[in-house]
Amino acid sequence: DHVATHPGGVARLLHYPGTDGLEQGFEAAGAVETVGIRPHCDFECFTILLQSQSSGLQVLSPDGSWVDAQPIQDTFVMNIGEIMTRMTNGLYKSTIHRVVQKSKTERYSIPFFFSVNYDAVVGPLPSCVTAETPAKFPSITAGEYIIERLKLAVRHNE
Ligand SMILES: O=C(O)CCC(=O)C(=O)O
Ligand SMILES: [Fe+2]
Image 1 (cartoon, protein in one colour):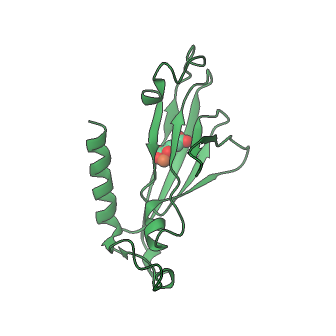
Image 2 (cartoon, rainbow, N blue to C red):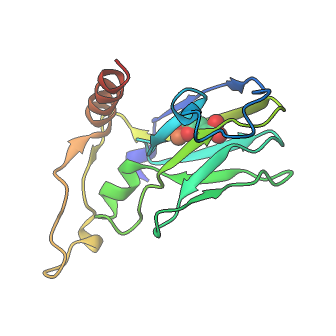
């Protein structure tokens, strides 16, 4: 529709080398911090992820446990991003996920982050705002929001 006439889109080409020897005692070794990607939500509207047949991607379940998103041949994983959460006023929740590379097999993945137009103002859609659930997020352009989140992520990794 009108917020996706010239949408932003970014793809990452990721390679996680095999981690020989980390399979046992992985968590104890504190390797979660160093091999893979820390827990995060994607910022954009949604993500389409292609992953090789080596596992590693995990999704945080509402009960607080990490669930393996086992690769399924010829399928993509879709993640809801934070812009979608904001547009739906929290109804569609962005998924917290991480990558824990503890396999001897190397892993490749290609996430494609689909944003709406960077100059589109995103905020809770009128159909998602009611008297019982007032707007939980201010409106902001998608581009400004993504820059803000990227800056935070960079600061976090310092
Ligand atoms: O490599 C993966 O499977 C996930 C990558 C990811 O979550 C990200 O780049 O935001
Ligand atoms: Fe991600």
